[in-house]
Figure 1 (tube, rainbow, N blue to C red):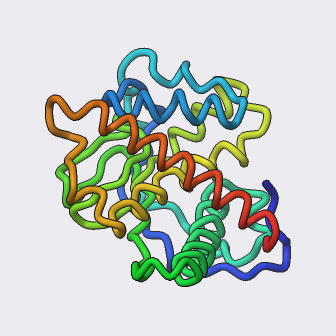
Figure 2: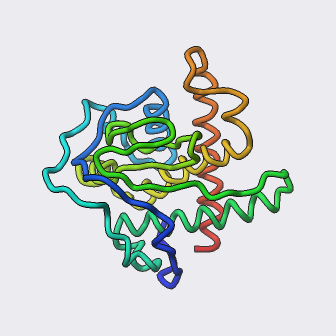
Length: 220
């Protein structure tokens, strides 16, 4: 999905940190489920991301990705990091409007969104690029390593990589909506014996991602 080139984006919306990793692999049971679901709904085979362990980190170290030029839809259509900025802005706008219009009594609160490189510390503990994109209920943050997208596009030959990238982020945002609705208070998908609840949670997050894509397609 392409963005209107005239759309303005807030580059301060997304935080960056760490050193870039060359790629990812492996992950938790729920990561496996999420990758399979995203492959199904986007038509892009991402299962190759599940093979093997994490790739070694790049030898070059940076303070983070420079997002200063990520201020428009045109930049989002050209560069992955800028696409993350505009996708986050769109998700904020759509979910704020939808939660208010539904009259559910749930107010939208923006999640944190951080692009990390190599490793990151979160309210749910430390994570590496091998974890894959994830949502942390404890600090209400979405985290991803751009190496995930690099591998998806360059190594797996994803033909519609921008759509898959946006869908991945929208899926994790779906977990944030669940958190706002109290889903993570009613059951903890990380506990042993709750794999069924975890599968339902992943399916619902995919549903929310699809709903965002429907709503966003009429406005961006």
